[in-house]
Image (cartoon, rainbow, N blue to C red):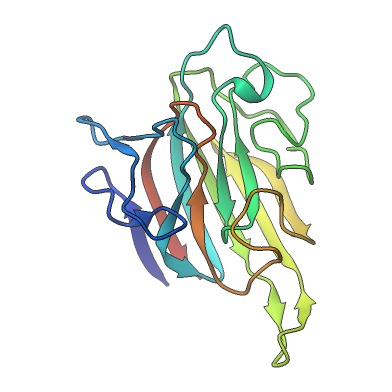
Length: 195
C-alpha cells in the first residue's frame, strides 16, 4: 500500500484542470482549498486502481438556496462515478442527487450530513472494474463509502459511469476529480491509499 497525498494545505499542484492547465482553485490562508465558482473542475495528477480515498469538505452557509444550488460539488471516483456533495442536512429521505448519493444511481443508506460550516469526511473503499486482455469488462467496480464515520453505501456495484465525468465508460485506472458546480465549497486533507 502507498499513500498519495493530493492536498495537505500547502500546494494546489497535485491537481490540474481536465485540460491539463494549472489548478485555478483558491488556496486559503488556513490551509484549505475553496471552489472558485467558475465551473472549472479539477483532476488529480495521480491515478489509481483499487484505493481507499479520503476527502474532507465544508459546506458554505447558503440559507436562501435550495436543491442543487445549495453547496453543490462532487467527488468523481476514477473521474467517472460522482459521489454527491450538497448541503442536505436534515433531509429525512435523501435522493440520489442529495449528499452521499451516487448521482442518478444510488441513494445513501442514511443521511449522515452535518450542518453547513462543519467539516465532513468521506472515506471511500473502491474496487476498480476488471477488464480482460481484450479490454472487455468482466467485473464492474464496487464501492463502500463512509460519511462522517457512518456507512452510507455497502459494497454496491457501479454498473456504469455517472453524468458529467471525464470518460464515456468506466476505466480500469483513473484520477480523482473534484467538481466546481458554482458554489464555494471548501476542501482539506485529501489523500489516496492504493490497495
